[in-house]
Image (cartoon, rainbow, N blue to C red; front, top):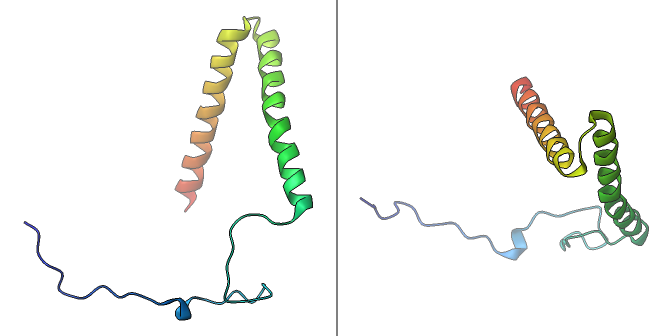
Length: 94
C-alpha cells in the first residue's frame, strides 16, 4: 500500500549549484571534451582499437590452429571472463 510522503521534496534552484573554480566562469558546467588535441587523440585510439582486436583474434586463431569464426568467439569469451574476474577482485578488495 502506498503512503503519501511525510516530508515535502526539497528542490534546489540554480543559485545553489556547486562552483567549479577551475573554469573561467565557476558557476557554469559543460559536458564533453573541448580540447581539440585530446579529441583527435581519442578518435585515433578508438579507430585503431577495433583493428588491433581483430589482429589479436587472427594471432589467437594461428596459435590455437582454429578457423577465424570460432576463434573470434573464443577470444571474446576469454576477454569477457577476464574482465569479470578483474571486477570481482577489485570488489573483493574493497
